[in-house]
Image (tube, rainbow, N blue to C red; front, side, top):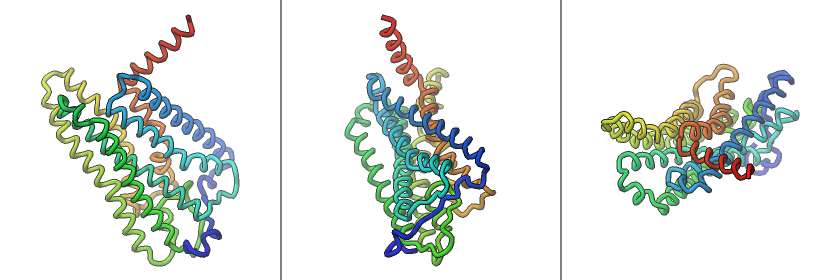
Length: 315
């Protein structure tokens, strides 16, 4: 089935969690619905706090606000379809629909990778050059870095979507997954897949390896500067500004590397789906908790808003 005359005839079927009993699928539906709701609520809360609180009007929270918006869109690309498929038989999706889902998933995921690298640079300037932080990380630079991340991700996602749409699927169209993902579709295709596999490897370099190296490059001088601080309180304060970002980087990249940088790795039964659940469902829910529970400014802003709300109601 090429992406030409047979485009509208092409249809994939997600196997998803169909190997589980109906009761387990219903249980998963409830769990994933709660996870999705928690991810939406947490990220909306961060967006609201960083928008209305004057104390959070800094470059760091500008990027955090954008990251939270990305997480909302990122989870909405896959989870709603997965929830429907857990309740309804015939988990079909057209080739056009599959490519569209794949495009937005890659676009948003790649943008998040770039944002994590940009946030590492922001932390580098804050820790290693604090006196010039405001001058360097001004509004124009923040907007330009955000725009560059989005444009770069858009181009890479378009390349992957075109690559997948050019493949031929002459055998089974049953996808042992719960959403359209490049490595899965490449394995499903027939014929010569060398170009597609090379494209996946090149994409992994631009999306995974290069941003990760930029993050490491930023954190080497950050750690050196933190270790150079004599007071324990000063070291703790400097490290706390980077801790949440570091946790997000470790979680996001540790799962993404196995899926995209090492796409030929052999997983045990269900292992690939479990890995995808981590970076497509669980981590977007954890990020708001990571950035709020470990961040005194966010917790303080939330506490003040709640206190004012309660005080106004009492009056």
